[in-house]
Length: 400
Ligand SMILES: Cc1cc2nc3c(=O)[nH]c(=O)nc-3n(C[C@H](O)[C@H](O)[C@H](O)COP(=O)(O)OP(=O)(O)OC[C@H]3O[C@@H](n4cnc5c(N)ncnc54)[C@H](O)[C@@H]3O)c2cc1C
Image 1 (cartoon, rainbow, N blue to C red):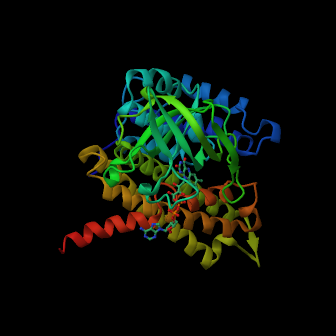
Image 2: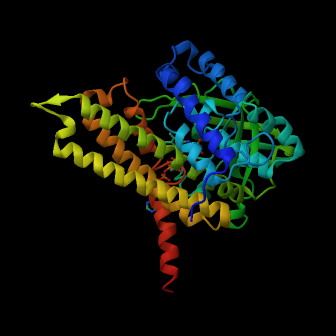
């Protein structure tokens, strides 16, 4: 089923691997360490310098296949590069391949008007600005997006946006200039036609970043996550994406590739956790023997290899299905990967933490933050239960 990588993708893979070794791992701690309070959300010179370097090296917009700004890779090819850059939580932004900007760039490329593309897509592709995606609301169960209450109301040549969102990744960053906001434009319409998505400049009067949110204590500065209030924010009607009532359609289009990218990155994290597990086990002695000679440790290592291979296969299959049959037809494969990979990656990282002892939960290793990342992704982009429910529906339909 799986084809060889093209020579172009192989070349990118080799150069990406070398860039990670030369620039990312040595700088990882500095990139992930929380900045001083006053500079929390400011652009970080080291990250900006590395972004410029990655761009100059042509290791930029690897996910993007809508035009010359990207590399024209298939999902299957990108999976294998994404695994490499996923090995470090610091890396995706350096290559302009981070969430939620990737999803927003996909939206703008697929559904944006020429003006929307010129104003927002071009500076996102060049890395000049960042963006955020505001769908989830504290007041309602947002895994069911039909619950969203934020109002997008037409007023002459404008729309008024009013609502409260949270978990808006990227919103606290000083580089974040635009939000893709999902809200209801017609509460009386058919259930999945009530919602719209609209572009809201972050500096528009009435937009307030109320507070940053932490994930298990990790702030993820300088992009971060925030609660954001839209207090009667007025934006031109031309900021509407695709058209009133098309929000669900856009959300579905956005989340498919977004979900699979998370899975691809996680396989890289899991591989690195296994490497770290083995290195640690070989270098530590307890009760007279190397950890690597202990049965329980060896079981953990063997099981982790089995787990990672399964995770990689379901992810590559989903990427292959997206290339071959389109995102919509591949939705079950995407759902399977989205359920399987964060759980498996979390289990592998958990074993690695155990084998590292106290070091594993400290800031000296990447493991604690990586574990938090895998845990949140069993909720973000649709909780596991919602994806299992969708799969169950398909399975049961066979027996109607
Ligand atoms: C770090 C992080 C970053 C995020 N980034 C963004 C972002 O950039 N933009 C954005 O809009 N959102 C973002 N989110 C929000 C995320 O997508 C939501 O938290 C998620 O969709 C779940 O919505 P909810 O929190 O309202 O949970 P709820 O909808 O209240 O669901 C709670 C729980 O109910 C259970 N449940 C729900 N449905 C079912 C079902 N059908 N069957 C069985 N059980 C069910 C599940 O266990 C679920 O976890 C982020 C979240 C986190 C933690």
